[in-house]
Length: 429
Ligand code: ADP
Image 1 (tube, rainbow, N blue to C red):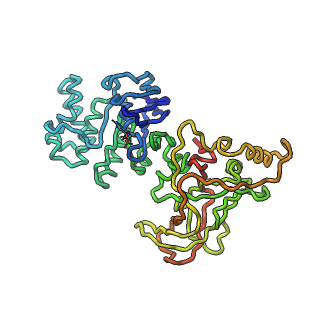
Image 2 (cartoon, helix red, strand yellow):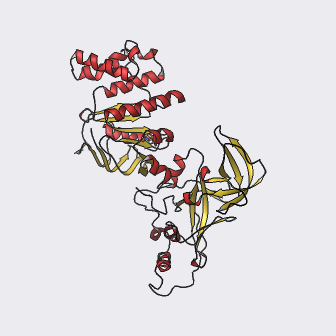
Image 3 (cartoon, helix red, strand yellow):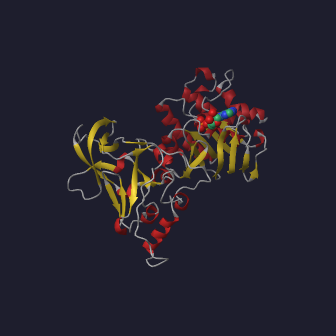
């Protein structure tokens, strides 16, 4: 089983298009790594570079501990599965699966036995003598998987293998791929734009936008503790609320996130308070999933946004409300490039704020502070609009359209991003 290491790898296509921008990423032995991102972000380019089908423009690619930039595809011991299966139409299912073994001149009895066994595991045993044209989409992808697996490569590369299938078949084959690949223990790099596929299949997910690595971690890490606003938004099944808030520190008593018509206080005892305090006087982006917001009664003593229900949406298992609250929202900012470390307040704000924050923790250090002026806030990244809050109402529509409502905020699950979309309080990895 191979390891894959990309060290500062870039890909520039002829014509000058930068498809991959200084990416460093690795897959351990036996790991199932998913490359996730929107169409055109560079996932397939990355996979094709690992396969040897695209040249690496700069940086190093290591496979199984050996530098592989110039290694021919056939010497990489990788097997690839594509979106469309790409089977030989004039060969039977058996002929398709056995092809790599025939090329490798394996004894016919061994080939027969291995193909028969594998076809049973893939539940296509009864189709062995049929041609691909007579198979369903799901069966064709099983054959493609069989052909990839049969010669026991050290690395599987899968490029959206389920995206041409209907929803039911996708779910079924997804589970089978997961158990098959895990039982074989082969290192796998799997490309998809589907966040559910990524979350359910991966040991770790690498999220990519415009050729830039946004985040990498286990499914729970990247979902619950995303490194960038892009990651948080891309992994949200419901639209993520991205709200613009100005950070204030009234008389240094606590941190105030000022959303305009509404505020949330963060006490100094909160582990995130110091990181947020670097942005006093500046605008940041607060991410809130719809399930961090909920209808609450008058007696609720936590943070609350007030608003008016504009519409209710039925999603089968739950209701979502669109609530007018007057809070400005922002769109996802452009991805931070590898050398632009956002979240580094020294890069984006006056060094004086760092000193102010230090003094708050260690009173008496440095020269006496001036009374704290609160500069006019800068605009957080992305486009500002006054869109609705999306609120998870629950399994019953307890609100009505037009009603004035109280929206409770789960302040422990606020996601805090700098204006460029990087995390303010560092994610745990
Ligand atoms: P994804 O797999 O995430 O959809 P791709 O890796 O296919 O993205 O493409 C990344 C970017 O590189 C896209 O903008 C695409 O148009 C561009 N691209 C892909 N292949 C080529 C090529 N052969 N020549 C020039 N540009 C390409």
